[in-house]
Image (tube, rainbow, N blue to C red; front, side, top):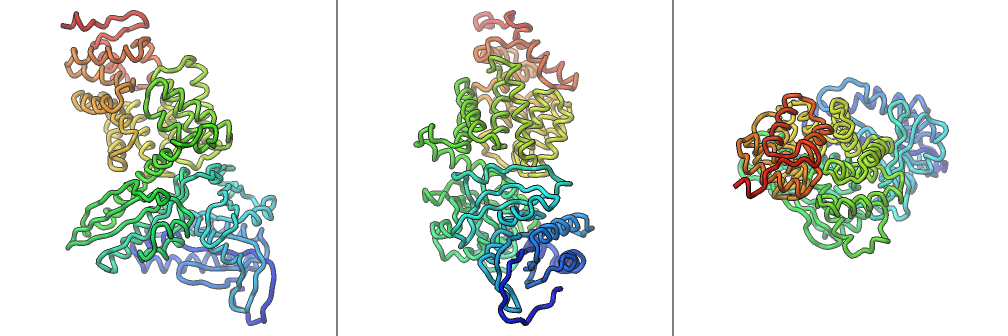
Length: 601
């Protein structure tokens, strides 16, 4: 029943539905003809027939979006679930087309041609918060259908909505046959970082550059939306601010965000330069700025490289900026999110006291909010360092806690790539199962291919299995995504392990020396550097670094280390043990055979 009506004004309560095509600009710039055909096919074979099936009414359609009315909230949610399931199963050529859907229930005024109400405006706002393939509904809708549809509901909290003053609680609808109940506790963080990506502006006014800029903006928003650490405003809400006529403070106030990412495009012949800047609007300062150079001949490869680099960089830059805000706040006033932020600066100092402080903050975080999935993951990550660095006073207890919190994080939110990444690493390093760990890490990368830590830890997993070539290729993604990461000391250490496995001891020494200079107390790099130097024929230097290691870890022994270190490839294990032995490190605890500095000379 899609025909319009010519009745006088009528009033009723109904379910209001907005739906549109995710990343439509990118689809059009890639292949406009095929995009138009695909969208027409989706409407005529899925959306409209399903609308007729539940006696719904198509109110309006424009471009890549439709507005519909369905009499029952239950029918509306079931319509959306059927549509999303059918779209996922439909064979599509080129980049798969995905739909975003928003549903709200409210009183409406029908003038015979369209429908009007605050609820219609609200629905148009909330559907923009849906990721590709998702359904977003209001709390009133959730309350009406929660026991009547085969679905679970993931809490999105009360995100800011353009021109909507009152807070509106929102939920993601997920079919129970394809997903488990998920929790997104960070959505209710009063202090969570919020970001808007403004349309990238072109200086020359060229049509192809405008499409290019819109495509970059859209892809960045899609990529950042995968992060559970911050909230990003949907593209449709930022388009009106692309003309550059309003100040950053005005835009941030209108959108309710703290951070703005802006960009510009400059073209000279076939050369392109993209300038980007991340601004902390509250403080009125740039947090990060970068430029990217490329040629228009491979414009989409260039676009993908820019997007992946920006997406990977944004989260750590925003979190660092957020952490710096906490300096003047008393610790007793910190909520669970603040505890996580404060813990990271302590954890990545990789010193004895810093581990204890980070652990205490993360333990407090999960105590304040037991449903905060990433807090559990970060606590497991912290315990990973405590265990691997030999800082635990009860290895059995702390190993059990690391396993528990890593599992709990995934149980609470299996759709978070960071949670899966930490779970995978704990599986490989502390449960001695790198094969299963790699399966989990692959799941993490499917969720977020721009997460450097997932690439790095999957590289480590392949190194444990002796797959040096694959491990090296994966680590290259880390350097491309985040060349100036606060975790670079860890990534350099991972690179050193890979080169030891592959027998490139000189390169291993180079990488491990960088890790040592960055973090002199990081025991993992000292152990590997000691072995790499000895295997590279530099025995005196190896013994010198070995003394540094023993000063850091007086109880170190080769036997105990090799007993838990999950290097599965026998040749690699033999090489590592031989290097440590050549450096004169003790075979057993308390039986030091390392020569003194005097006897070395």
